[in-house]
Length: 319
Image (cartoon, rainbow, N blue to C red; front, side, top):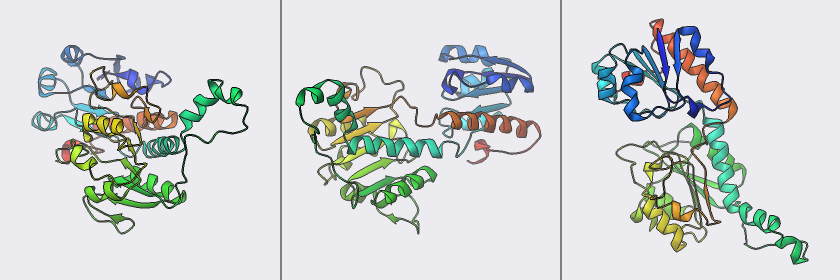
């Protein structure tokens, strides 16, 4: 059996990828450009990838391919319909990153609310030393107690974020497709109208794509509104969000995800990079050390299950 890991660099340099060699011949590439996918998978039985686009063309050229293992939960980078036709199994990993994504979400909100970057800059620039004052209270920051924290989506990550928000004294509301007994559910419009903080946790699909757009952002009523995206870049209309930041409609903005990754110079967000009320992180919310160990272990279990005739994390059987 031949296993090809197409974009191993996305797993981090500190991971032991030798764990896959016990299943057979293993080829590991840090990155694989789109024009090299067909060549590298031509003799592969198993493809392991995070973000490489496994299109119909790629699968049709990979005559021996039996299994695609995605080291992520999202599988929109794989043509599932083609996989079904060609009887190629597709596995993902669920629930592996709940702890670290929720941790980063809360960290981003707290950084924006408390203006950590501004106060840190004030001290490190020497301004604090020169001021002669024992403290500085500008920019003004506010308690989270009694604020409303809105969750767009209500899966495991959002639920954990909601518990943290409640522990900080916030009222939590959520927008989700189905009602839930443990949280007040509202429409997306009401979520943005009532919330002081909105964090995005919804999957990217035809219904959610660019759903955080200019029309929705007009619903914002709170003066110090904060928006944090740890879902998918495509959930937002990036131009509309950027304009809302520039106009002050959004007082604090953080995102870990982008419509095009990495963010390029043509991104509407690129012009915001020097703003102190904006935080960008490079799609790292999922990647704590323990999380990545768990991810590789689950991928090994997916491979073992498939070749043992078991159906484990098979997204090709879900649709």
